[in-house]
Length: 302
Image (cartoon, rainbow, N blue to C red):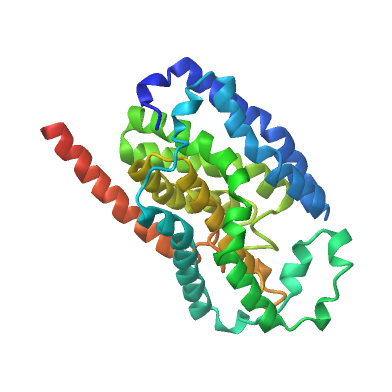
């Protein structure tokens, strides 16, 4: 893990300029493409271009890249926690969402099919697929292959956010506010996708277009606290990358649970980006922040 003292103000400004300024170009195009229905271009620009720019920003700012923690030296329990934890906590939020919105629960492939590129969805006859069987397959995939198949894109972001941005902000603002500001900035980084294309939050949700950008900041603030906690415990950048990837993977099978025509509820869930969907993540983050604040106070008194 990089010592915050090695991140000068000048280098941090360079890092943030590249991480946001350069990334906003593909992110804006991706948002516009998604809004126009071109999910292939949107996915490519977001998931395979923009996500690597924070890592490139680390190199551009000439920060100690090698000190991010590339050697996997950690206790096995942290790997399991990073791999399975986001899945379980997201599913708890999903259960809460459907507890309040029981009439919207239906295992189907409609929402999932709408997210696929037209070139791909046209080659698959979803009407011939058993939705329940497909859901089981995708749920198993989200717990096994998907987190590891997307680890490199997640690593691109984590090298920048948890590797550089969080340590710097925590050194300047303290462990609590540093993490909260870092999470808000992580959410703001995604804003072009939401504002220009309605990514993450579909339909005419309540409070559109304001609450979508606000909600992603709340969600990623909460998840950012958990991911940073695991990074501090392991000093290995691969752990937050796995956790980030698992967080994304958890949303895949949930696309098969929401009854078609209820996308207006996306601001609430069922995935981790919605208020109810991330409710348990928020609770866990608050607990960790309280413990972190107490530890910081004790350290200052000593």
